[in-house]
Length: 131
Image 1 (cartoon, rainbow, N blue to C red):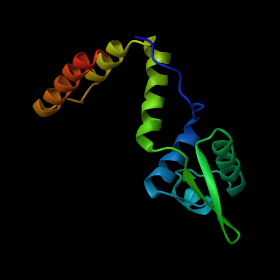
Image 2: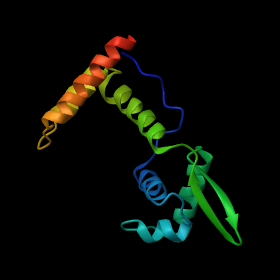
Image 3: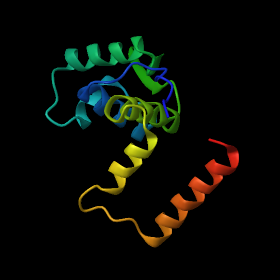
């Protein structure tokens, strides 16, 4: 099953780190992002990365005096779904079943009986909806 392409450009590792900070906080300034990054680059580098994220459509800003406050443009769950579709397309040739099989085969990660029941219910619901 081939998934649709992501409606946002993919992110680099550092861009994902920045987005994680902004999502976790709800909003953030450049200084706040810089303070939370591990092995942070310069202030100017973070500012440039945030500008790239704005250009890609992931962030927007509002001004509070001299400070720009950045917020995500889309809810985290919508972006996560889009990113996952990109992973499925890139690494599993668009095959959802191969991606799920890989997730179920991750070392050290066992699903509880409740999680297995939840997955079974999701699969049954997808069958009913013809997905």
